[in-house]
Figure 1: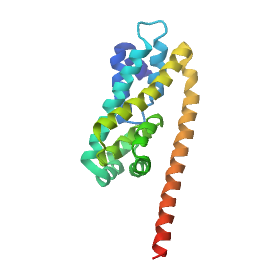
Figure 2 (figure 1 turned 120 degrees about the vertical axis):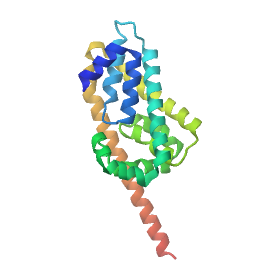
Figure 3 (figure 1 turned 180 degrees about the vertical axis):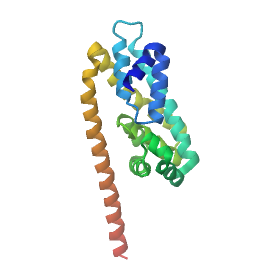
Figure 4 (figure 1 turned 30 degrees about the horizontal axis):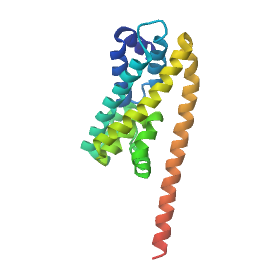
Length: 207
């Protein structure tokens, strides 16, 4: 997969980055770090520049986020969970519980969730779904998505440009970051759910 993505970027430049980031947002298993680090590395010794790479990636993120926002708005929670439980979910490595986790995070932090989650692998895509389910204000959704995506894209593109031909050496560190952040997210979500259940139980017992 990595070689294919590199070939697409080499062939289509900014358009290739836009399309790959769009697909990465809609199909989370595709690694954005490869796209962004390699895109940044290409700004050294080629006609490509960091600003346009970041802009192309951010526009791709916005397009993918809008697609998932509309999916959430149209299908709602239960239909999405059924979709993820079937063949569609297996192809994309998406599980029904991902909808609940993203919804829990969104309900807890609302607007902040859309901004913060753009820097959390996997959840950066899925957070658009509960935003659509809850019919979040679309201009605000686009603004927060653009800001969060631009931050994530800028960090990786600049890192790729700094490393140049050695860009692949950053992949293990980014993968480790991804594992740690996703683990923290899952633990935080579980803690929040348990807290809410305990609070509800105490309230029922007090009646």
